[in-house]
Image (cartoon, rainbow, N blue to C red; front, top):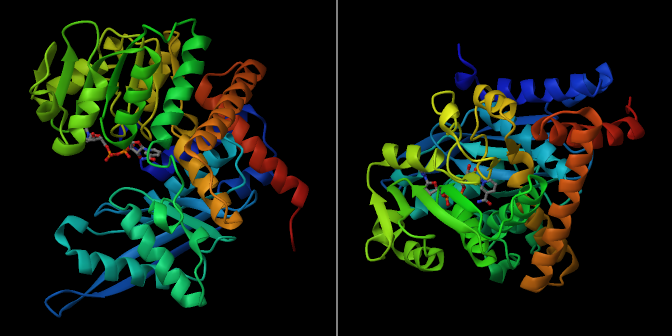
Length: 427
Ligand code: NAD
């Protein structure tokens, strides 16, 4: 079996074990950190619009809370399994630790295709799922957030259901809420903004001037489009972008990203958005467009769409010197090993896309204080955290002489391990 087709839980455990072995982690701590703290599977009965009843299966996994409450999204997707949710909860544990915010890691999900449900059915599903997991979530226990196919609307329902159960309004139980319910300023842009801050540091590290650097971005959704916008404003040249509808390439110096960004908000497609623009080439074939974006002659490549985009099939054609993993898991282990051996810098997902969870943390802090920050304050504080984490990871790269992914894992694991060791084992 190729490494590309491994179960996510196995991949997560392999990554953990590799780093744990390099850092010679104490065997007892290794045993503790390789297991989830709590796994809950619930049946979620929902009355459908036609009066029938369907029972969906949901999970919530709290992987680790040594450093603070659980933190992680809730996804609605037919492929959700307990193994997948556990792997994602483990990754959240390392993600919060790598940026040193006082949270653990958690994740939730329901095996459902929400596009087949009405809004009313989705609301009843979300509220009943919340009621089923209510004993383990809470501002001090575990704080959910949006993930695949969930957003501010679902977070509002979760917050309301939780508040009804405890008899008062508690908005710090979830993050990613609508602004009027206590959502943070700058949350929608946060992950892309974080990717921009990461790009500044990664370019500097590789001796690339970000002003004028050529960049290709796969995925022009929340993360990819915001990263593109901030990088363009900084003076970088975004020359290639793709999404699920095709790809767009600059015929001249760079793509006019602010115009594309604006139009994509209405059209939801880079192909449709670029239709009226001058100096661009449009490729409607998704496969061909993606391949050309990923192998474009650029300095920096930002995969911001899907997992397993950079595989052994295309690794030899990648020209970028820096790959910033805005998406989760875009590079397969085989491709990573090859690219690193060619001297390329792969900035790992657990750090590269941590801007989102960092601003989620800011949202939780603001909710608990009842005091709200300006957009500028959010951006400034996010930059401080992303910069500090970059320095911390580079320190580990030098200390252990390892690539950036292992360094980020070593940093994260050492933070969780230190807290676990100091607290000792309650018996
Ligand atoms: P999104 O749904 O807003 O955007 C996804 C983009 O990928 C869209 O432009 C879509 O068209 C594109 N896409 C889908 N299939 C594609 C294909 N076959 N080829 C090319 N493009 C394709 O999602 P998002 O929030 O921007 O998330 C993107 C990635 O970043 C995911 O891996 C997600 O897990 C990760 N991430 C997101 C956040 C966040 O705050 N939104 C935080 C951390 C990590």
